[in-house]
Length: 123
Ligand SMILES: [Zn+2]
Image 1 (tube, rainbow, N blue to C red):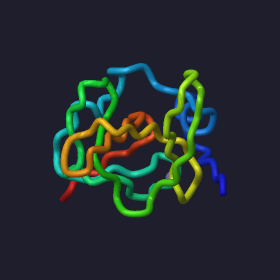
Image 2 (image 1 turned 135 degrees about the vertical axis):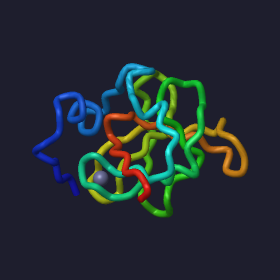
Image 3 (image 1 turned 90 degrees about the horizontal axis):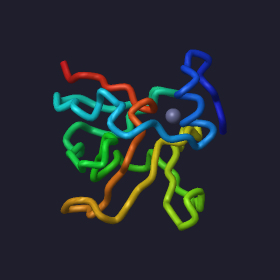
């Protein structure tokens, strides 16, 4: 189910619908530490809570857990080896890759392109 938001920037379209990746360190969300939630920039669905965000040192916003049942995954070989890509279950937009080197309790690292996320501060 692809529904492309007409207000997306060229970079957002590249990352979310052509499996692009933003340059590491480019997202202002890397430094976002306030309480709130992270939503899909394409469809607005809530994907992550700020409670699960952590500093991975990768240069991309990182989370050890998503909200329940918001993503689907598939394996890609774009870099020549298997990686687990995840995309928004609601709109099919690509968000990033999930790795098994995250912190406890999940051991997961959701490495998410910042351009795919919209932060909403808790009020
Ligand atoms: Zn979405």
